[in-house]
Every structure is written in C-alpha cells, then in structure tokens.
Image (cartoon, rainbow, N blue to C red; front, side, top):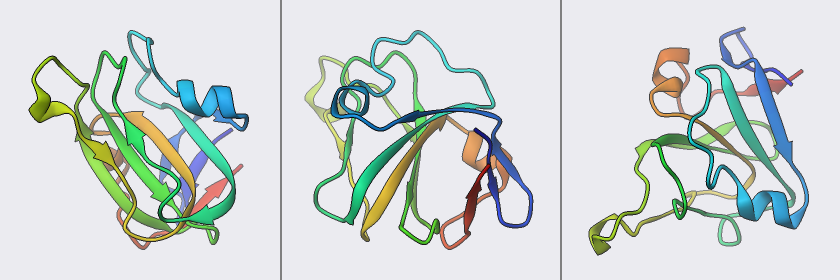
Length: 125
C-alpha cells in the first residue's frame, strides 16, 4: 500500500497493515531496520484518543509516529521516538491528543522528508 498526502506527497511506498491484535501489539518490535519508504499502518476498528498508544519496547531504531483520525487527517506526529533503554527516562508512551483510527510508524525523519504535518489528509492507495 502507498500512503500519500492529498496533494501527492509520498509518505510510504511499501506499507504493511496490522489489523489483528497480535500484529498491532508486535508492531515493529525486534526488527533491526526499516527501509526509508516503508512503514507499518496500525488499523483500529473505532476511533479513540485513550485506547491507542505506542511504547518503544523491543525497538532497535527510532521512528516517527503519525496519528491519523477517521477522516484520514493527521492529528499528531511524534518525530524521532527513541527505543527504550535501561534508563527509565526513555520509558515514554506516545499517545495522540485527539481521537485516531490509524497509527503509521515510519523510519525517523521520514515525516519531515515527506513534508507532511498535522492537519493534512492522507490517502491509502
């Protein structure tokens, strides 16, 4: 699947979709790397602000976390989210500020390089 902004900016060209509980829970854990234009789209059945979050347990590289609402509008982008370490300061949970239906995880810096920002609509093709 390709994820692009409504005005044609490519965010990802090779996007995997996680729909079941196990694949959403696993996310990108234990992967050693992610290609520049690849990503993982976590799809949820209903929109919520409080039910969905990202915790960087078992991650080996930083990512950008893009929260997307039911209208496919970006609500929040957490750039350069770092993996957990033994230092408790890194034990952060990333949450949206508004209800979302999807979370897109991409390699760190990809959101900036793709030129997307909160408020933009995305297309999944």
